[in-house]
Length: 300
Image: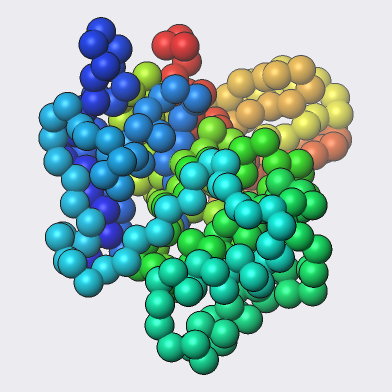
C-alpha cells in the first residue's frame, strides 16, 4: 500500500513557485527521505500533505483515503511545557488522546525507553536540543501512528544529538512509515530506504540510492593510489577489456569498469609488472551527496 501520495502538486505565492508539479509515492513501511537545499520545497510538500496549507493545484492522499489510519507530525522546532518532565509531558499528551490508563502507562514506559529518557527527571526546559527532538519523536508516537512525518529532525543539532535522533529513527524501522525532510544528505543516506531529491521546487530524482545513481549518471568505481608512476599505470589499465574509463588524480587512479571482480584481481598484477606499489585500493560507492551534486551542478 502507498502511505502518502502527491499527484501533480504545485504551490504558488503570487510570483513565487514553492513547489512545481510534484508527483511522488511513499510506500507503506518505508523510511523515506525528502532531501534538498533550504527553500527547495520540502517543508511546503509536507505541509500540503498534512493539510496545513492548500496546494495551488494537484492533490494528495494518505493511505488511499483510509480513514482509520493515524498520522503524527513533528515540526523542525517542537514546543513543550518547560516545567514538565518527559514522563509528565507524555502523560499529558496521552491524556488528550484518551484510551485505557494501563495501556497509556505501558506505552509511555516503552517510548521513554526508546527515546533514552527513562532516567531523566529534570524539567524539559533544561533539556538539550537533541533531547527535545527525541522527546518530540516520542510524543509523536504516543498515538501509535501509521505514518510519522518529521520536518528537519536533525537540523541545528550537534553531532551527538544528530546521531541520537538518527539511531531513534532506525529503531522505528518496520514499526511505522516515516517521511522526513532534511538538507543534511549524510543523515538521510544513513537511515532512509528511499529518497526524493527536490531542487528549486522541482522533483529531480526519486527512488532507492541505486536508482538515483542511475538518474545522476554516476556509478561505483575503483580507486587505487599508486606508489610509482600513476600515468603509466593508468595507460596500461586503460587498455584492458574490462576498463570503461580511467582518470588520474594526483597519485590516485580512478577506474570505471564493466567487470569489477576481474579488475580487482588484475590491478595488483599490473602494478607488480610495472614495479609500482599500492598505497590504497578501494571500491567506491557514490554517496547520495555525490548524486545530488551531479544532478544539481550548474543549476545553483
